[in-house]
Length: 232
Image (cartoon, rainbow, N blue to C red; front, side, top):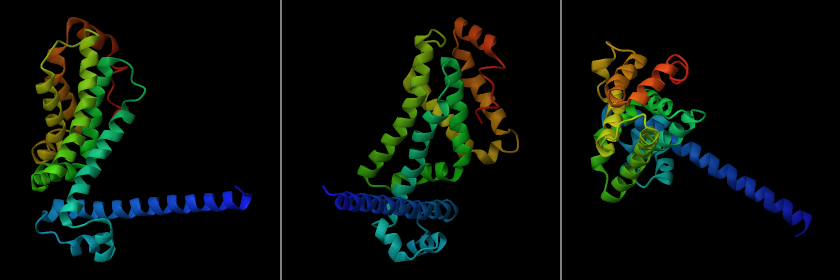
């Protein structure tokens, strides 16, 4: 290929990449507007025109990226679950101690929920509206997040720091606890800070099932590896 041909290919590739980036940015702009409206007004009371006006785009542009309002809802739910699935592992990087990672996954998940309370509530309220194929995608994304929690628990069990428990039940209990910071925020916000809420969760969901080794490890590392300040 000649130098001119190579340059032309590079320019075309860069233009296509910019186009994809712009499309993703525009799609996210619409999704964020939809989250705000769905959470405030409800799915059925929100129109495509409402979403377009809030996003600062035309109705035609909304339909360029989404087939209909249900498609917008589907992408809003995927949007937040993708954030959890992407950011949870990133926030756990550099934490090597199994028990530290287990406590950290509770802290970081609650922290992400706190940043996305409206989206979390929306997911609980609206997933049932989706058709079965889209529900399956949302469930798979949620299962991916739960798998991160389960991996931390399994590592603690393997290292002898956690009792052998029914992971099917407890993983969902951990997830439900984190989600409750959004779902029951009205009940907790005047009684607990986020840090205090997480500490109560650790006392309830982790401490009672520690083995002797787990309790010793936690006692040895309290104030250092298991400090909360760096995780929320």
